[in-house]
Image (spheres, rainbow, N blue to C red):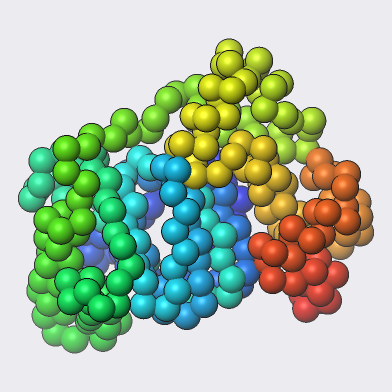
Length: 273
């Protein structure tokens, strides 16, 4: 959950004193393009809102909501200004307690009236508080809360009878990498399908199923993420930034940009100056 532009694989480094990574993420409005990692990722929103797209699903999280995304699952997110607790657990760690954790998909219905759901929310908060305090013996208590959280996720929210095809289709990964690196060129579903030897309709269906958004929309999101990056980190004119990012309909793009980032490009530029 960051605005840094990366390839689709995210390298996750554990906290130096733990077997997992836990941190508080504080973000301005923005977009996180498609990525995956070899961890199970749990996100609990504290303030603001975050929208995740993955496996044909769109999930909107508001304060008190959490999500668990399996290892190897392509996912992207868009967010308003927010703060969240993020927990990333390596599958190698979970494999000590559960067979084949890399093949697990979770179904979580956000319900604050559900005692089991609220228990997981409380455990995540306690985990973070214990880690932040670093009182003597904090790692004992942290691991207690961690294992209880994982137990609840795997016994109560795991989709039974379903094995996911981790890291999907190799060619689909190549399509995503190509879009991420060549966003400024003319990109269409048709020419991408031809380049990577897909039928256009099949590529559209496969991408929507795996990514949760259409391929054409994803191309646009990648371009907008580069627009935002350049607005914040360069002095180039905003119109030129749009054009250099492969966007010609600047009026439409500005409206969509505002939807994702909560402000007009010119407003973001003024705040950063």
